[in-house]
Image 1: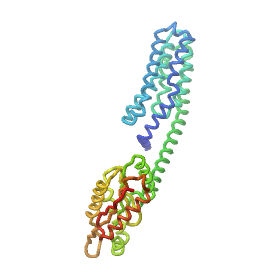
Image 2: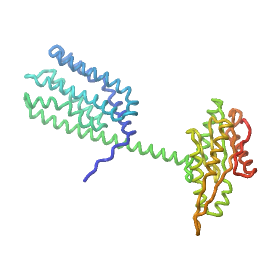
Image 3: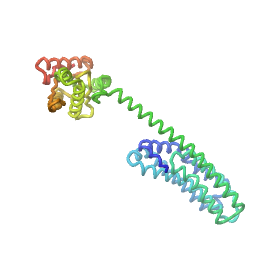
Image 4: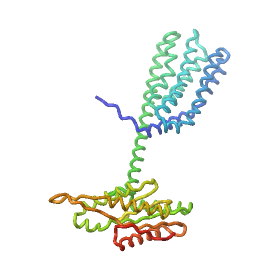
Length: 381
């Protein structure tokens, strides 16, 4: 038993809806223009003014509403995609239906008219072009051509004039042709769209991998250096401070030597998780700087704010108690860290490299004073 393919993700459906609107934009005023030409040159406007003006007003109203809907489509599709699609597709399908009804009204006359032939000729062109070029939407693909040709075909069944059999066979072949051609367009579009989405997803994953430390899943040093350069340039323009912290896990070599590198990796992962949870602002950045060292950047943070965050980070690590399996029972292993803090109050007077050196110097002082503490190095650059 065959199963239906899963529906495309919402972001891909939204992109398809916007593509559909762009494809349909060329025919926004075309229906009204063609109808006016038919009405004037075939004599329909003088012979059947009610049909002419009613149909023309319908095309005009649809054009105005479509223009308004299309101008708001990007925003509406972001908030309510099903409603945005239903309203826009409904407006698209209204035009072939109006063509079909107008043609049916002319075909219902006892004797054929030149206007009826002109409408039928235009209708088939509209049905074929719209049914194929707009077939990226499955509902449009199924209904666009059918809504145009079925009303006059039904009239041919109810009020037979001329060779009814030839007309119906021709309509059937026409619908089969549009159905086949639209399937090719529909399949090609969605194959390309899905392939493009997959490539973009892989590119995002590769970009994420390139800026993420594989062990701790926080930013790596390369990503930190890039972000620091960006934030430093912005802080220089806006004249705002940038706080930097160097964090070192105390006695980590002894942890590796006594309990093994596997436990050491677990220790780094848990410490990174605790540090990341202690940072509350979206713009704050935590990165693994190398080995057991982490670095934190706090844009727009002064001395007081930096010390508050540093103390919170220090307490988050101190609250950790990891357990390592031994032959007798799990052994609790406390962890601690030393943190050096430096706030560049005037980024224009220094550089990212010098600020990191000052933060590293503050870390050295924290270690020299006995570790497991926070030290801030005074300075403005």
